[in-house]
Length: 163
Image 1 (cartoon, rainbow, N blue to C red):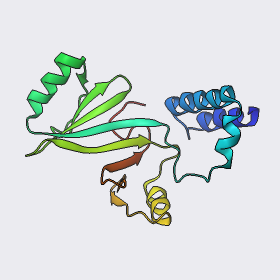
Image 2 (image 1 turned 60 degrees about the vertical axis):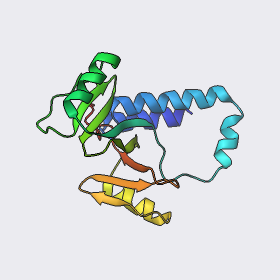
Image 3 (image 1 turned 90 degrees about the vertical axis):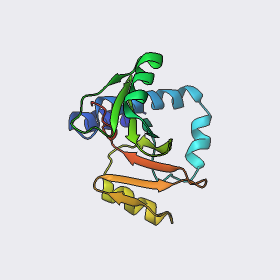
Image 4 (image 1 turned 30 degrees about the vertical axis):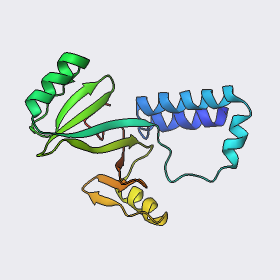
């Protein structure tokens, strides 16, 4: 465990981990240690394609950006994150972001998960290696879950968050 902590601190010191990623990983390590035997059972599972560190952002398609922004401000205390683009409209939810896209029909667009050491080309290759079909657009990689929900993986600032 000490080697794991030292490795994480080194990654943080060299800029390969954000402060948020460091805290999340340290928290996960402490939780695993506290769980005791659960760590051994987890070690026997096959490795996963990615290790999601947390929800990065949720993106919704809305029919009226101003109305939706006002709703989330009034009822959930969110604030708009300044950006040059009108859409998506980025709303701060603590350390997370709700992205609002203008669309003719309201629906969920996608959910993004933060993964460590994110690289779009590497992420797409990992998904292909698992038989999944990634949709790559610039530095964004999307793929579908078994029910067709659109998922995204990204680094800590993928949804407009401030590192």
